[in-house]
Length: 405
Image (cartoon, rainbow, N blue to C red; front, side):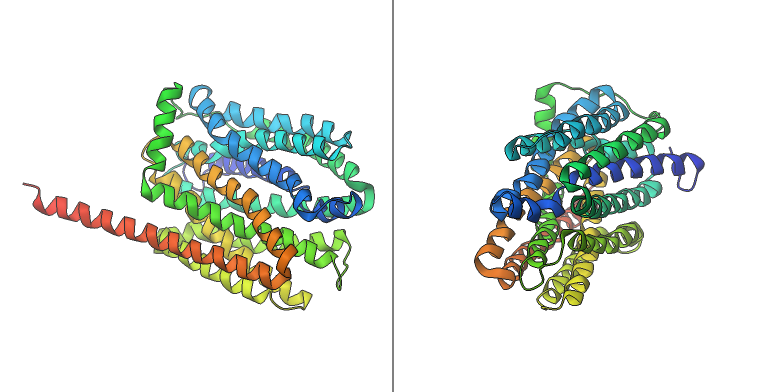
């Protein structure tokens, strides 16, 4: 196994983190462009949201098929095929002009991204020691947040300077170089064993995970958490480009630097698990996010940014813990389990956009805050439910141990 601090750990963790960085740069490239499409193409904010929602939906629906394929051919080949698809599709998008064709191509980008996202944590779970896994997952998700920041800021600034076509072309070139680096550095697996890849077996595996409360509740936590987090940033972009602020897209995109708070807390989450446990951390992260949402009620841009920093820190902390929880608690079919977590995660993100944007269109920012607090209430209920499930499980195990002859 790959041990924490070893040269092989550093090489593998870097390759996975950089691959994750590329994935999330491409995933969120279009998010700061949504107000631009809404303004220049004369479409509603809800329709513009399809540029992001199509990508996350494509990603979510491809995760389980990619995971199933990885059980047969291995994790590394799936991750590399996934990455190499990005510059090819990016080049086609950069030469397109029809809104709905771009939406369709963005859905294909999501499908491509799914290959890496579905199996990276399973790769780590099989290759890393338990202690190394806890830290590596935190580092991997930190790279997620850095990629998300970079893709959004890059997309906003390049759109202002070169237009959205130029922004996509620049990201395509960067992706091509980055994929070549990951392909060179990512080691072959030593501990992968091909599994049964029949559709019936994997269908049963999916149903087993969904019928396991300690896994399914964590998946729901991930989905609701992401529905709140990612779309709060989308809606605040609409808020800042509208009157009375009327900020340029390049400046508005800089609010995504607030994701740096999530980069820090994702790394701290691994240490938290070792000392305090994941469930308490999920509750804590959710409460921190709630505080941040309330701070964004301010009409001052500075306090909006502070609120987003707090939301980012809390939401990424919760996500890191829930994601790592599923990979550790799944007794078998880890790739399928982590893929199912991400299905919930990205479906939540897709649907949450329409929910919060509708609140913005009808009730302005106070309505968005109320809608966000509803999601936070649901989150806390799910965390409480997970805590009860694990408490009952421990009590059942103790009882079985006592009565055993």
